[in-house]
Image 1 (cartoon, rainbow, N blue to C red):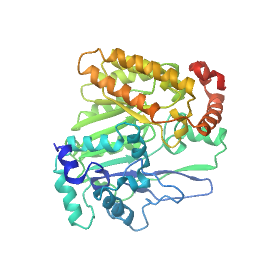
Image 2: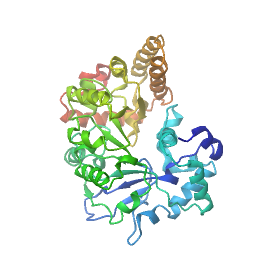
Image 3: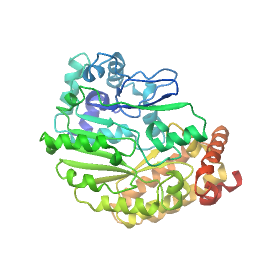
Length: 417
């Protein structure tokens, strides 16, 4: 185990370890309808952004996956992190945005995770990269995105991450786009030699055949016992076919996406059924071979009822929670909330905070921290009329295909619809 404080002392508080010892590898992309083919891409993490340009992370013809992690763009990003200039990187807007609101960003969460789980000395690994002109041949964590196959069409999602959402975008939003899914590059398995952590993302990972095939390969080659597996799931179904395989790995960690209970989650994550989500989440929670964390995507659709979710988590003593601001469609966040709605949300959260502040430890600290982050999302997201206008347009289209319109689920929004 590494000491995260020593890592920050050595490289600065703005350090991100992903560009040095990690990567996000995708075989999926959403492209204009006229585009017939594209290459796979590998970038420092799944949240890296680019604006006003073509995807700069595509793997070029004849270039290996390992060499694709050492292009000028990768080297520049490493240089900026080591120089303490990560806030100058437009690629990293998501974590900048998240930390500005007082939340634990993916950068901070992943740094801690890597420090806890990587066996090699991370400080020495980064120093070796520094001494090698910022070239990295070390890949300790890989997130693999084999497919966008997903059964849900979440209101804050995009077609590149969900087949169901893509159908909605084309049919109801008029998008002229298509999804290209490629097989993995021929040298993909060669990159897994030193890997300690393999993450699967999507799409709904439990439904992707590529996930099952790769887990089988790691078991067959005898390397599974040395690898930690992480998966994202929408908890729509319990992964019975994977449970026995999980026992072969060093550790299995599930990030379970739950943004509310009852009608709230069924609106935000259209296509799910709360009773199924609850059943799956509790089975994961009670399985001794699986470690779980609940990821909550905060929007103006669910924040007024967020205490219901926290109460549910406390009822079942689920206290590993991550608060994630909505990205890509930031206008779905608290910045669209007029003052009267904002005040209701703040009052409910504050009342919840007062209630949880009386609990014994560790419950008090765990839940109060989450509530403080939710409050921070409102406080640091001032109202913008243009975001409210975009929000109304967005929700009117979602309401067309939802079982219930938003204002019947969250009546505080009724005056706007």
